[in-house]
Image (cartoon, rainbow, N blue to C red; front, side):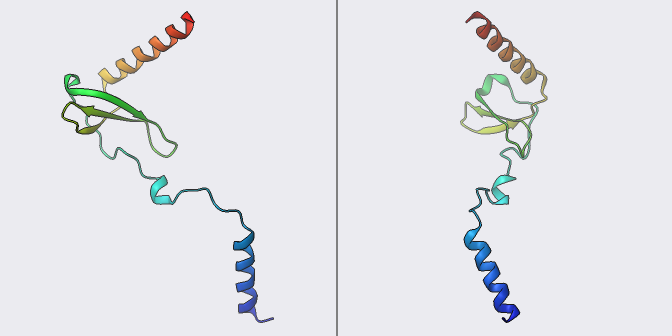
Amino acid sequence: MDMKLFAVVAVLTLVTYAPPSQAKPISLVERCYCRFTVSSVPRNIIRELRFIHTPNCPFQVIAKLKSKKEVCVNPEVAWLQKYLKNAINKMKKSKEGH
C-alpha cells in the first residue's frame, strides 16, 4: 500500500471514530470580560454589581452605572472588600437562622 494512501486512511479512520470535542475555541475560552479595571467609582452612581469567576480569568466585578454604562471595578478596592465581607456575613447569619 502506498504510504500517502495509508496516511490518508489512518487520518480518516481516526477522525471518524474519535469522539467529538466539547471544548470551545481557544479564542472564546481565554477571553475575559474585564481587560482593565478602575479603582475610583463613586458608589452612589452604581446601579448594580455583577460578579464573574471563571477558571481562566481572575475574579471580575462589573458595575452597571445609573448611566447604563458598565465598568470593571478592581476587586481589591477597600469599599468593595467591605461590601463582600458584609454580604458573606449576612449569608452566614441567614443560614444559621434556618
